Structures are given as structure tokens and as C-alpha cells.
Amino acid sequence: MAQPCSGFAAISGARKAGAFVPFADPAANALEADVFWRADTYARILSAYARDRDSPGLGAVISLAGASCRKTLLKTVDGEQHILLKTDRDVVQLRCLGEDIRAAPFALELIMDCFPETEGAHRLMRRLAGMFRGGAGDGKETGWSVEAMRHRDALAALDLRADGKSYREIALFLYGEDAVARDWNDPGQTMKNRLIRSVKRGARMRGGGYRALLS
Image (cartoon, rainbow, N blue to C red; front, side, top):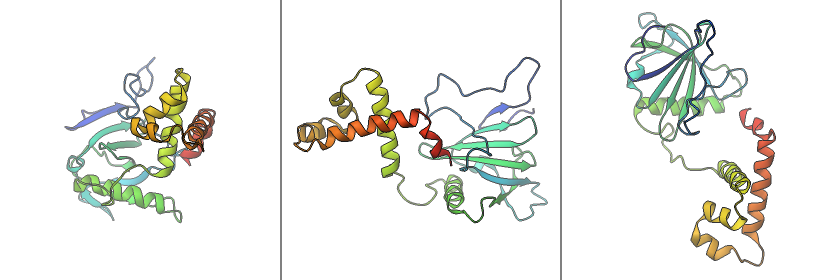
């Protein structure tokens, strides 16, 4: 494998005898690790043809150096290329077929291979375009959605409970001192019941429920 262009971290799928395809760095946390998903098991991947800049087909000529983000390249043993683009708040995995995407510039021809279920691909395309513009992909604030907050609370509550923390200690971690002081002794026990549901939801996710998030 040739040396990657400046600004890339590269992972090669070409293995020497006795070697393994590398895994994510076990010392990195979930926000820092470079994790690549298989295209046949994960729907949230953009696909594209990479073409020579002089024969772009229907693609737009770009250079990955123009994307204001961290870039990690994985080249599999069959020559398929995956580029992981990450900012502080967004991640896009792009699967490329064709020319070497380390060449700068090249033509990128995005594929709508999920037609007619195109909504997810449109969101990823806006996110990718935002990385090349140097801003958010859709021009909107990207705070936590209600669903994402529930997943976050569930996993955090499960971890803290397994670590021996009381429900009140978990509430302090998730909601802060002011909210706990105000709502912990509420006669309706809303906060306590919410925490119990979060722990149960986390246990379901640990038991295999997380697979629903990959579809």
C-alpha cells in the first residue's frame, strides 16, 4: 500500500502471513475510536464511485484535503476503500469503488443505492457536504434528539448501576444537582421511575436490542 496523503490515518487490509486486520485502538474511547461498519450490515453508509478527474462521469471533482475533518482510510483485501470522516459532532463513512481516493483531486460520484428509501442517504449527503463547506451538514443545530438522549441515559445508567451506584447517584450524574434537589422527592416519583426505566432499557440494549439501531 502506498503512503497516504497528508492528513490521513491509514489502515491496510492487505495482510502479511500471521497478521490480522487491525481493530479499533482499545485505548480509545467510543468518541475517538475509528470504527468501520460492514456495508451489508449497516444502512448508514454512503456509497460512491471514485473516478479519474479527467473522466469524471457524473461526479464532482474534489480533494479530500478540502474536507475540514479527521480522515481515516481503510482499504480491504478486495480493493474496496472506506473513508471515515469525523468532526467533533458528525461522522460519515463513505464506501468508494474505483480509483484510489488518496489521489488528489478525484471525481466523486455518489450512488443512491437505497432507493426508494432515500431519507437517511440525504441526511448523510448533507453531512458530507457540510464537511467540505466547513460547517454543519444541514445548517441546523445538532443537539441530542429525544431518542438519542434515551439511549445515552440507558447506557450510562446501566454502567453506573453495574458499578454499584445508587439511583440517586445516577440521577446526579445524568440530570445534575439542581434537578435532583428539585424533583427527587416528588410524590409522583417521576425521576425515580424514569431512572428505573433507563436501567431496564440499557439491559435490553446490552442483551441484543442495540441491533435495532443498525437497521
